[in-house]
Length: 157
Figure (cartoon, rainbow, N blue to C red):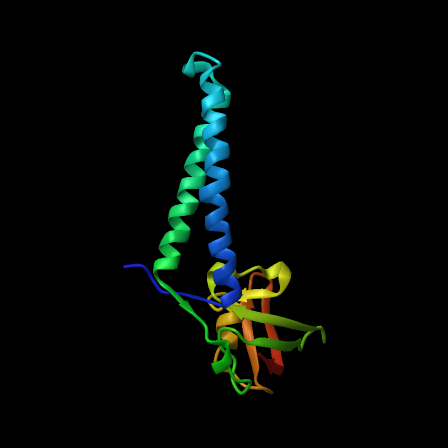
């Protein structure tokens, strides 16, 4: 049984676009590369063929992965989100109480996480600790470097 994937509408559109690109453009490109590689003769010593077949396997695995995610997807109804507590879909401004630095995180499902863009998973240590908290709450998160103490300054949609 696959677990349910919680996703924003924006994330759903991104996954659907990636799936469409893989199925239409990438599959054709890889089929063409395989066809060309076959013209080089002996498959035992044909690195172009091997590379194309490996890439084909990666593309097909990704297509399968996205299709499975889409079968079990639950799209967040962002109109139902509130700014009283932190939940998936919230944007949360926090203060690192050790450094005084402020950061804003968007709590998203694991398939949409991109820490470099401030999009952290509800399953990540920081995301998990933030869930169901309210403005003013202080919480600690264990990270590889030790423990970080945060204060929630603001919860936004």
